[in-house]
Amino acid sequence: MTVRRRCLQGVPLFLGVLCLSVLWVGGRSPREGAASTAAPNVGTRAATVPRAYTAAQAQIRRAGRSIGALARAGDAEGVVARFAPALALAVPRTQVERVLAETVGVAPLGKRLGESVLPLAPDMGGYVADYRWGTKTLALEVIFDASGAITSINLRPRQALPRDPNVTYRQHARLSLPFRGTWWVFWGGHTERQNYHVIAPDQRHALDLVAWQAGATHRGAGTKNTDYWAWGRAVLAPAAGRVVEVVDGIRDNQPRVQVQNPANPAGNHVLLDLGNNEYVLLAHLRKGSVRVRRGEMVRPGDLLGACGNSGNSSEPHLHFHVQDRPELFGPARGLPVTFDRYRADGAPVMRGAPSQGEFVESLGSR
Image 1: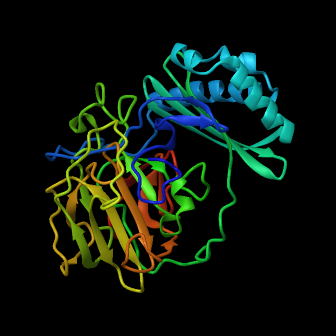
Image 2: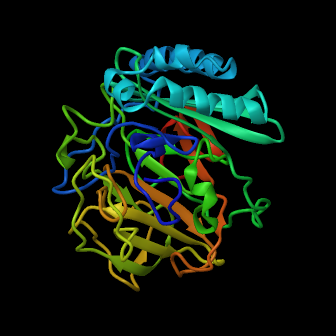
């Protein structure tokens, strides 16, 4: 998913080719999800954080902070010394020197305002940190390989977010997480660092969810949809509602390939009217998996379909958001989302909003 696109996207900003300032490029092919024949649900244990995940996070955090220190010092030689061979061939040191000099020339990198540390696979870790930069915020985004070498790096200013007209909105519907078992929040939160959706008014409070096991969101090379832990997992109705839109029949994408589908960015999806001008979208479902029809009433926990990789998606995942009207990608505005009775990183939450990096699992309806 490319952060500069307004339409629904699959998985992460930093799985694609990134640019430092204008031309500093590097990176691997983007990954976005898919779906096909139903697979059994996995990861049904309590939503605690796997030890392998916390260990990988610690390693990535150390590496990311070290690059941040080099960038703050304007040490281009130190940054380039951490490049993987392919990136070193693609990006000369002089270019890095120029970019860092121009950056520090505007303002020094000040206080670190926040960071995201995401183990994506055994050979891929993502690090994002926001720094104060004069009156603005500068984002440092780095991808590391298994050895800690940089395979992709990006340094860019954040754009100020427009005012959220629904920041104080109180949700009417009582929602449950729309799945069984444990899922991992890839995009979720109120800042662009945590959730690239915030730049799109209709998706400002959206979530992208995947499954993370055994060091990654997939087994093996991740080149087939069936490699992904989220592939084919049941997607359930989060509340009672009426089906107002259904799309099925859109093919699932090949994983690790960036896909833009302007005609059907949400892919196979279900849109539910929850009442009180609250409409929930569940998107990127597997082709042929949708089990409801337009006009049908559903109850909490009813099967809607299966997790897939259709539409603008490069890896099997579930996109979820609530908006104030039924038209997609029009004048709708995204509404803050809270769920009842779930577990986040092992701790029970009676009502809350999942955020990036959390392992979440429903505790069931009341």
